[in-house]
Image 1 (tube, rainbow, N blue to C red):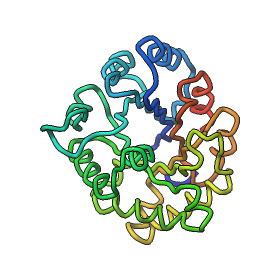
Image 2 (image 1 turned 120 degrees about the vertical axis):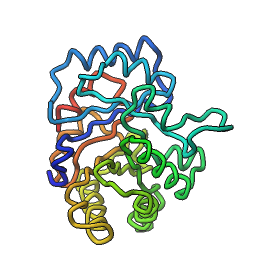
Image 3 (image 1 turned 90 degrees about the horizontal axis):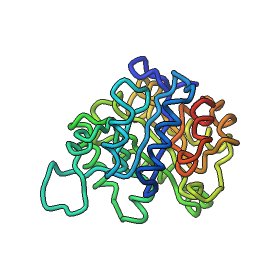
Length: 254
């Protein structure tokens, strides 16, 4: 697959637990991953709810090929932001990554491209690797606006990124997240290719070939093999299936 950076040769396999899990079930997941024969070419990233970042980080240990990610981080270093966590707090709890711009943050919590851009600046400055999420709604795809939406979202990220080696792009068509609908491998590949072309024209050819573009949206043990074979799909951001034993199969599909 194209898009493998020499600095970051690993293919990301991300598990976004969203607002799910407890100490017992998350411990079972880390135990399963620690005991599984994982593909060493994949960097596995787990994004638990913020209150479990430290638990997972300590259970996995610093030597693990499994890293921990925040699901979201605030753009301010500290202050009167009830319910939020800062980038420094996420790092202090063992996070290496932060997911920014997830469609649920955009469409459930109303985060704007401008705010997501500010969060990106803050996260990169703090030393987190950003999983930058983009993707269109169903009506946007049906009206032929997929790349218009993705470009608008990508531009907000681009304007706030100085070091692309610390960024992973996650393309998640909103209509495929948690719905059981999956973009066909051909649709996903076409959009990933278009994203890479846009990066080549608007950032640089070097960044376009190096940046890792991962796919999210109802990825599971059944469809992961065919998706993984696409030239411009460099890994996955997995939702519900990351809580199940099949997550190991998805990691190893890559």
